[in-house]
Amino acid sequence: MRSDLVKILDGGIGIYLRESGAPFEQPEWSALALIEEPDSVRRAHLAFAEAGAGVITTNSYALVPFHIGETRFLEEGPRLLNLAGSLAAEVRNESKSDLLVAASIPPVFGSYEPDKFKPNEAIPLLNMFKENLIEFTDLVLAETVSSITEAKVIQDVFSDISQPLWISFSLEDKHTKEPKLRSGELVTDAIGSLDLSNCQALLFNCNQPEIMEQALITAAPLLTNDTELGVYANGFKPDYNDKKANSGHSELREDLTPDQYLKFARYWKSLGASIIGGCCGIGVAHIARLRELL
Image (cartoon, rainbow, N blue to C red; front, side, top):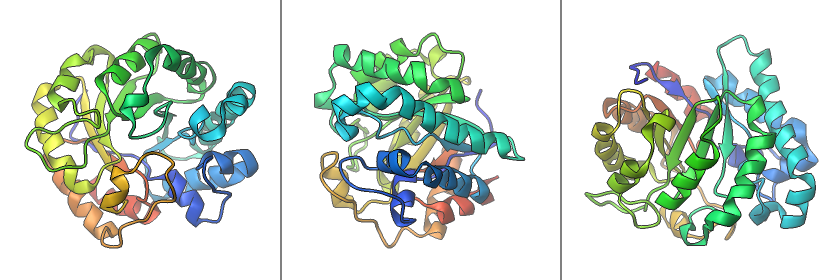
């Protein structure tokens, strides 16, 4: 149900782990901390919750063959997904606020690469998340969805869950009057393809903050009152957003301060966004400033 109240999502857990000194290398990315130092993941969740996030996201984004290898995924995937869910749930259960946990469902073949998405191969990977992660969570958040086909497969796989399903699209990082997904497909067509009765929130993530405006303007009138609108941008330098997944460590913008991010967030709220947080490079200080939206 659409609401005037803003839900604050957490920020980018991967960059937080890297900057806090947790184990962090390519190709494992944020999964390495989960594997080698799980308590660092719990501390990251706690930091975002204490900063004011009302929704924390499981550290499961990199738990795919693309990052941890096919053999490890098949042999250890269920245990690692359970661990990712239980760490976030532990922080929620110890919280004195109404904290929610979102199950992070990642692009199973790598971020920003819609051409690599293969529906038949994706289904068993997504089922691994469904069977081993979402029991710990309050909602399911499909992140960085880059094509209509990917969104449809996600909706099919998670059509029978009891938790709300949130779908977050990633956009071409270009200023256009008609915003597009990374696949080149129009946002209008992507929303039109969704079963909105099985999409409690439609979001945009992992793009520059400047790109989000037109997508929100386009999406808002197309959604029903039962589907919330949300946004969580990244803090990467513009050239990184054009790179392929896992192509190297990211460089962050220096101009995107917590105060500047709050200005973007206030504008997004005025455009109808009721779920606002941060993606890669948006840290605890940024999330703390978003409390002024409440």
